[in-house]
Image 1 (spheres, rainbow, N blue to C red):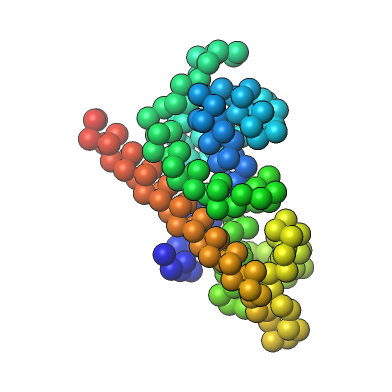
Image 2 (image 1 turned 60 degrees about the horizontal axis):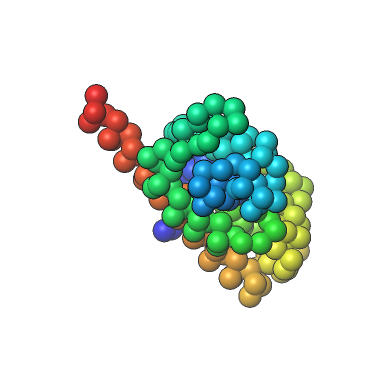
Length: 196
């Protein structure tokens, strides 16, 4: 998938707030037979954090992922959960290191933009934040991944390192997976329309 500028605004508007940790929490609960407690143990997160993450993900996607039987009761996967699971699992396994806690879809898009335009200032403006925030984001992403992803060339901009190219492939794969989630949601909306 070519990440084009017109689709970036749409992607960020709809899904930019999704944190990778939310998707990984969903995967953990799904794999733990819909148990927030066991999913939390897998992710090393509290049951409350897992539950909050699932509710946030449901709010962003505007779809039910689990049917809740009440406080302390068991969950059961909603129909859409079965469709989302392989896509979310793919995203989590693509970004399988410590960055998943705070990394969001907007961070992935910024990385791809920066790799494409090779200018921190231009990528930052396209994302709607200051150059200093763009520099901070690069430093944070490199810290999360434990790799230097860009060579900074002063006024000539930035170039990807070898690790940066490998990470760019992972970032594009994540955006393609987010696009797949959108297609699944559109298909779900079509099914709802047919039933009405």
